[in-house]
Image (cartoon, rainbow, N blue to C red):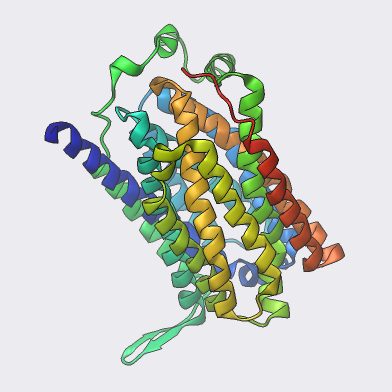
Length: 416
């Protein structure tokens, strides 16, 4: 028992640590985007939204490809490629001179980000029974959201500056990117040294990979053919799954471009205050994913997904009420608990109906389809904010979040 458990624990710790460090690097730069855009002639909500869309478009294109290559070759290699590519995108930010340079950086970021989480989820669910999948997925998601705790706080401090006795940090708009680059490279080293794929389970695999093993795995035709083959059935239920997952993300993507400017320009709060808000969300999401992620293993996937979505709806009900920093920290509790319940249960549901040797591919397809919301959501959110104001955006996000409840009842897949 110990021989089986210890490698699994070692892999979990390694994947969690690599993902946590990577998302910390991402979170560091989040609070200072508006200020940095203003330096190169941008700086409104629409600019921020279209850059987020560039990230989403790159993620949409690259995620299924990386997922397929991870199943064919090696999850660890693809994760490392994602970590090094994501880290070096910071250099583009640092030396950016025009608004288009930021688009290039976001495209690089989006493409390589898609190579990190899907293979991680596929790798950690190998050789794991159905009764423990949501718990392990919850730990990986908890590690990711931990980066949202540390990253924005650190980014706000690095931008605003900090004085603690003899310790004085002089704020700089570029310092967060150098730190993000450093922690990203650290994540690469952690992954290279400690992530292992020794715990694969050949008994649970099918022969979908073997059938194409002598062919070129990077062939577009073969990639598409295999992706169609491994999509969970029925197709309509998989589409409903994508809608549920997408609506949970889209509701925030609609708010986020305008909310940052609303936070700074209308409420007159600081980058550090915004860091506290995002960190509050990250803290409660991490706690929820770590300690509530296993509830769907015990009480059923759909029930926990539904309850989690109700907490997310409460977040959008109370978000317009906030006016000072600690208000938003309290409001973020709802979003954090909602994410902690819903996200591990959704991903565990997908592993329940997917064979082991196809999971990275299926997670890649799922992530790619969901990233479509990252293309259109921020653009629409930015437009809505510029034309109608933040109150209208809050209402639209609440409607989208509430609508997903109706689809959860139809998540009835066939077993593998």
